[in-house]
Image (spheres, helix red, strand yellow):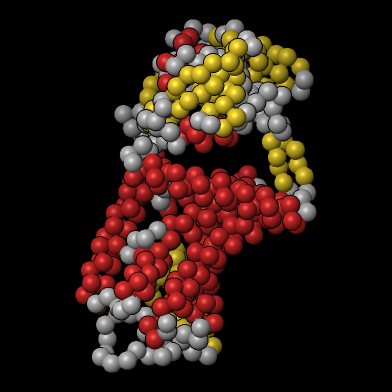
Length: 442
């Protein structure tokens, strides 16, 4: 049942994204009076549909994708002048706009979804009393090597003064193998250290080994594990474990590992009342790594402010969130090119299906957030200068505009073949990442 649910939600997610994308191409083509022969939801053989004017509106067999077929967009064919109503018969600047219209619609959708959501429900994480306060430093991490300690406050990082933790995270994940100048405040004194994040093996991004000081609660309790037997529930606030105050998820993991199987006292709060229980850790393997655990997934207890924004404010926040998302995507792409980030973060259809299902279970707002993120990712991916993608078409048109002549058909075909092979390689790698996350390792 869970598989069918995941498939359903990914079809909803991808279906909307691609339909909006193709509508962009369709509307731009119709605006410039390009004859559109087919508008299809899905790929493969036609199942059913209807004809309106010159266009066949159809549902195709494979509900994962879609396309707009314009007259005269295929290279080659008969000699002579191109069809004036076809894609190739239009000026290059019009073809460029048609190619860019798909990604543009995805960007508009990403902003529009968040604008609508924020007018109904805008959840803002309450500002902490003290910005940049460190709740834990992982042993043998880059932060520990630089002398950073629990309780320190990051007052500046890489030129950003009084940074939020979001600012710190963005610098950290994009900074693998690059020294970050960090200003630390400790007992009233300020001094500088240089922290060089390493490449985190599982996430594939920069990791310094510090964590913000936050209240930590039980996010999930694993069935059949010691925490369940001890009566811990989702939402319980963790106060201390084995005598150590818990202000970061990594701190909990480290304390349980260090117990080496000894029973640990867990102090927690539920409904304002403090409780204590003793739990015997078990030695299990997770993601190829064996260690002591009690069977809970710790989460940060955020203090959320729920607001309803006006249209201008909602639009401003939606644009800002998408700007941050786009910046992160470009930093990731740059990091991969510079070999400072791993492509392990790439997700294929299986990974997107899981994200879709999880977001749908969390509620409409989470699903809308995911739709916005995927739409933005789809727009940026399609704008990459890779032949066969919209960005590749735009690049070839810009080259032709600069040369003031068409590239030869053999050159275009060769470039497209290279782009197709590259795109297939990316898709296979993303699918491999999906399967690797599912299959047990070690």
